[in-house]
Length: 263
Image (cartoon, rainbow, N blue to C red):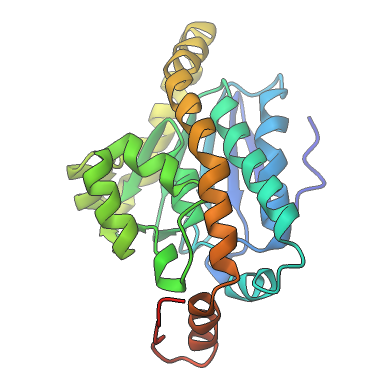
């Protein structure tokens, strides 16, 4: 498998372990149009990569991902590229859930919005103690429709999911582990070693048994995702056209607090 076409995702191979690193470090790996398009196809490419058995998903530099790039969100709010964005988001989420190979998320620094959805839909999630995890779609006037509505209730139950998604509150890695949102929080300087040890353990295991165990567990999660994604993405697209979202983007650009009016 050749990954030369990828610009926003750095792909590194070490034996049977493949590391995918979101690669916009100067922007805290915020997801722009190009990265969004690459994320919509990379998990399919990984699935058919015969030389990889275990995947690690992480970010280059000081963050896993700061979520959606605000300049791109501002462009989306004009509506011109929203339809292709919806299609890309569905391909991204479902190709991640369809991936049979075990995928480990390595979280460092901010892990926000769509970035958090991607990490939390991985199979095993490790976070350094300095990580901050959350889905603040509502703080920019949007519905958390691009995966958050799938990931959070599945992991922490509906009551906690509604609290965190309706407030957009960020969690420390310690709190995320306490409520079951992630598997492990470790000291920052131990994160790489712990992730590597788990990746090697899986790579040296009974590959077919591991893959198909994961695939079996994901059946229910995929059924749930298919039942809600069209609706929640539709609601998210409606909020892209809202005055509250335009106010949030303008407030971000002008470095002020948004004043929401509920329309």
